[in-house]
Figure 1 (spheres, rainbow, N blue to C red):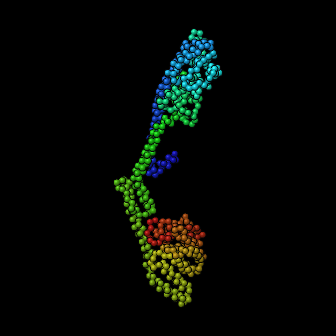
Figure 2 (tube, helix red, strand yellow):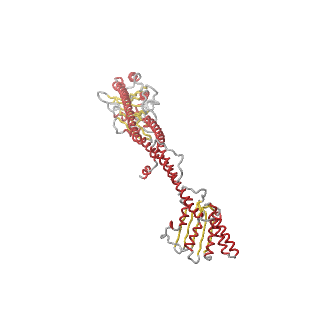
Figure 3 (cartoon, rainbow, N blue to C red):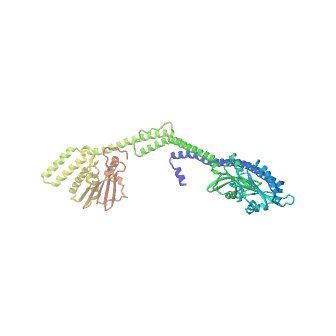
Length: 583
């Protein structure tokens, strides 16, 4: 919630940009994922349908293959020559004739129509023969005893009339026949049902290779008999038992998504009804959704491009909208600093621009009126000061005071002479040749002359001390700031006392000068006296300081009954002109 409030309170430019981005992003973020999920499902269904059709074709081929093998075994099972050979127990030329006729019979069966048969063994405990169709025989003598010792014999001997697919055997009738298939069957007398022998057919897996060679199977193909592999189109990083466990108990056909060894695979399987072999297609899921991922990548790229274009357009529109607002802010900043607004123009075709131009016009007009008023106030204050000065003829005063001084010297009246010379200095510094700007040292000399006259008058009961930083003595200030305040201290604070002290401190502080005038007079109650109306001189000084230097400059008074009064003056250092904007 706080983040949302910060967003609401953010600048209008950011709001417009975010509005444009959200307007583009929200529909894409809502529609995009559902679209990709839908595309994934469509692709999965299409791939699953294609693979199932392929597996049905494979199932048909397996049925044809199994049918051929069963036909071969039926031919052997029903052959009179083979029956005669198996039931003949003597070892004489007739046995060899029967064996030869049996081999010719097998040769007619295997050579022409069934090239995938490696070898066929027919025999019993008495005798037997191995017909090699391809390759080289692996067992030289007594094949029947070798079969009897193998792990397939119990399945063979317990079989009734039908044949058995014997996989997972370590028995090899032909050399170099890796992953060969074995099909075995008991040969029985049709009348007595007694076992006469057995037939064992060794089949080459090249049949499966030829089956899949030209069909371009989707993914990798496994043919499993339980957890035993009959055929694999490629090497896998997982075992047949893992695959068998996945499809076990899931029906005769289906589709499964499963993660194996950290990779997700798409399994399609079909179980052959005759053999219960499972034909499994295994495709990495990333291969199925590769096109969807490419589409996703293209879409994301287009989305990023659209967002960039939206951002550029939003920035362009925002700039057009907020241009006048930025100008208005600039105008208000200048107004706050009391600066003249020039060089800023608004487009009058825009409503905000019309308002901006009107504000600038009104402000400049008001500012001009204010300056005129300020000039009139300055002139009024200067006129008051000049009116006082105009009543005094400087030459008359100087000549008169000079006459008094020499008369006092002649009469050896040193006090009168001192009063005359100090009063002359006061008038000279007050008039200041008609200039309203003076130096700090002149102001201090004027105060000293005034206090010296008052000490003669009051019999040296006023003790005064000056503590002025030497570096500010040459600073320029407006005249008649300190003497009226000191005069106020004498008249209101010390005149009724037997003895008193006046202390004046002066120092530079930041961008101005500070003077502290303290007395040990009677003081007054700050809560009962309005400082702004306490004396015309103090009020005049405060107004002049603010008019000359600005609102932050002026006069401050602190007083307490029985302890005295302290006056603080804060004076600016800018004396180049008398018109200021900060009033």
